[in-house]
Length: 326
Image (cartoon, rainbow, N blue to C red):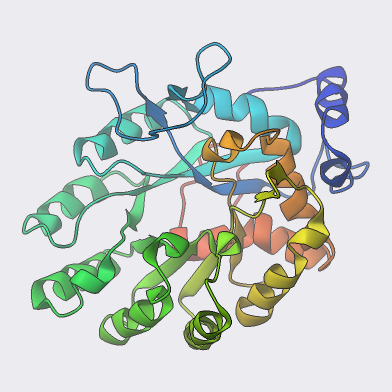
């Protein structure tokens, strides 16, 4: 476990923008509950086989941030903020990369689970799922382009197999277009027992008012499904070419998402290290803005969003005493 002394912690806190510092308070160094980051990525583009993700992250540092993202670097950045565990979400479509992350995680107890990548359209989906699920760190899959499989009995059967294995499905929702919530409603009508996690909704952009109204209608329908969860991830973005850490820039859309899903079905995720790709951005910025928002909802909401809710869709594995479960 990475440890930091008081001088290191104060130094890290002093380096944060005002919005991020305001999110912590005097008890930040010793939070009363464990914090789980439900969305990070791991990769090593220096491996002989390379890595297809990320494509265009900036370099800098030693080793280059755009080349290597491994648990020790994540832990050094997040531990001063009270983060004790993380769920890895696989961004690579290569099947073998699931096992690579599980192998890396075996020696990194800060990793409490993996949301992997297996294509439900693959005829060997069940075989791959059974093999990977033998490792308790394998919690589910992330998948896009679901609309292509909704009319395929085999595809739906594989999603049902995922649900029957007590696994969850993540969807990078903003990248699936304006019809994404409608597609997800149809999918859950066919596989109602599947736990669904919608990633990065705070980053959603609408082309026009009509698209927003339709999107919200289906989003509200998803809000009535008790097995649907969303992530408070990709909150911070650029405005006018600059990154804003002003919570008020994000509050209206966050309030709308909160009104739909409530404090029991929202989880914090940093999208590290992709979140570092914005100019002047950093893990403390991302964490600080998210925490500032949730802190306004009260201490119970804080515990849920930054800890307890992550156990509902993911059923992650406690590997350290600090990662206590509810």
